[in-house]
Length: 338
Image (cartoon, rainbow, N blue to C red; front, side, top):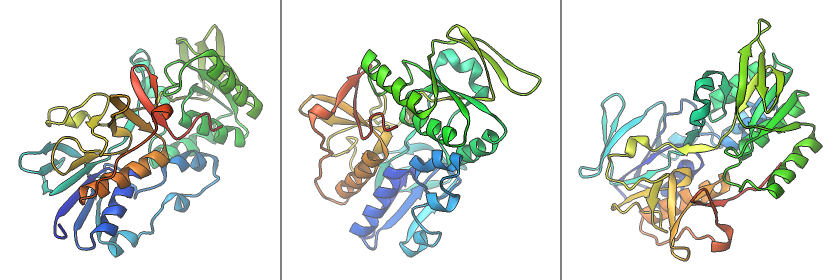
């Protein structure tokens, strides 16, 4: 196994954790990380602080530029996996290169979700997923005085905190869809609204845009929830969709994400999935659960890597910490951390 070729798809918290664990476990194995991201692996939970200027670019990278060479981890950036052949154990990359593997960990994370009913406004809605997104936010926010945030998830709260620290006027439109994975009920909404208002944001409840137009001055006139607002930009935060579309005909079982057992195995030998893209079986509830949050992703990446090299570690969480939301069982490492 020391000479095996291990490949990790994804360089987020789960992928990076898996790569480091593999290297620590097997000094001589070949470890390759493939990512669509142009940037080196970074701490995604710090992206809102890039917007506010609380941290600089150098502060978001967990590893130095020499780290990958020193630890003999081959990092392949700006490379997209198009398909996977599990019969012959190879990946087909976007530029037609094939890459063999003996063991595979899929940690592709997710992409920002914009509901279909808002699809026609997609071009003017700002999301935050990558370091490039954060830099664009930082540059554009400097030009505006007010921002409409449609949200309720962790990222929307962190971005709101960043905007308020910059002295921006923030209207926060709470929406049922964006509150995922929290239940949309009166107590949660009241607590969320209270915390936002204490920090200085104005709250409204979002049903849909009744009208939206770009003004000559460059800002937007938005009619939402019975009132008309003038804002410089609009952020939309409806959680993430697992980035697994390229796997739909691969032979893996896909639901919301990739179905795995409690050891994070996909049902195929030496193929594991970890982080936001995985749905993990829980024997006590006899159903699958998904993981939300940075800490959970790090832990799952480590477990997947340990099991790939022959350990037998379960991704355990108490049944009491898992709750049902829209027929998806969720375990989250955050709750209204605002």
